[in-house]
Length: 518
Image 1 (cartoon, rainbow, N blue to C red):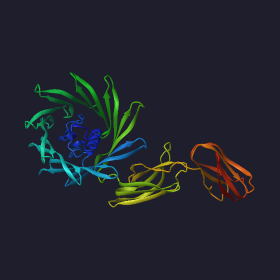
Image 2: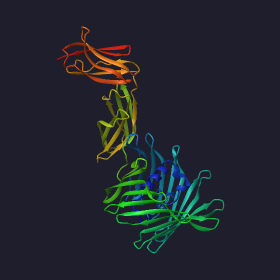
Image 3: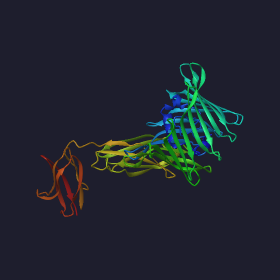
Image 4: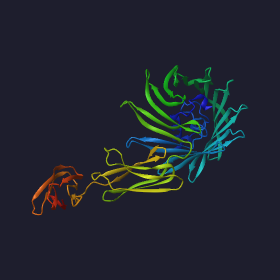
């Protein structure tokens, strides 16, 4: 079984790639329709999606699994795909794969069948087609008298003939300790209507029944012999496990090494993947694994994958996988819009299709490409509900100088975990004419804010005149770039009375009245 040959968990990198490939339909191709994971190091072998999570005690019974992609332009995670599982009597009943466009949309559905001993016998994958689902591939599992996998047959759907067609078959052999030592994979020859050798996997174990070596061989039909292809050597240093993959080129040549670092509970809390450059191991990717306790068992809660940036010599976020064992994640954001309402105010409207343990939303704003995100308001959520909820907030504090403003929602769960929404943009536009706005507050006592707009860069002079036409202050002058600008006019030294604020730019003048009171 999967748990006896690996780190008692699904490989994060392979899990992510399989989910993503499955969700976009790539897994509908024959190469993804094999029955069981052969070995996680051989990443071109397929997985049985009915057991992708159920095959490990660290991920089994997951209610939902979400994959996120890192958006470096706004430093946020963006949800991409989601798996939702439902159970009946303790066994997996169905599995849906969804992708997030504007809302979560089904892309595939997986159905199951079991024998009287609750052993999975059939796993059928259907992909979305119009308003329904169409057969794509299925896996037929058969067992020996000891309840072990004996034969696994993968079939693909022939839509023209309206029937299932054989594709691959795996047969297994075991040693006296119940370890699967040999797996022979055959391909169906549709012309000769017979099974032909394709690959085989030989697995060797140490005295503790821990996997030592996996060798993959490919069938040479011309010589009718098995030939070396790849192998994985597994070692168990203190507090870690190392898998070294090698490729056959007349001799075994290093290709990739993955090290899993174990925590005090002997569970992997991080992995490091390195590539062989001919003389040294160099960084490729890594993952950090976080756990939660569910029904007295430690389960994977989150896996964060990073790629190595060789140019900057640093790790960069790449993807993330999140698990929930009690609810569907995340809060379903069905709509998120931002619209200018007049002046510089912006109204934000968003709607959720459902919510689970939702504390609320922190509304965040970015007022320019070189500015950081700032939380401007918290809007309380509805907790847990399956009914649509609509929220609205008007931003009346948009920075005056901003021409383009970005918004996002930071959804916060009751347990403090967070998730970022997509980013929406509002273009306030560049000024098209010279404008001077009424200063505020007006009347002013000690100071007033002066705002103006310049359609192009020019020399600017701002002056204050009293009722006799005398210039009593010059709060601003000099060369100014096109755009919106604001400044402070100090009025504490001016006597009470009425004044005129004058903006002169090139050959144009604008004037506004200002009252000073003491």
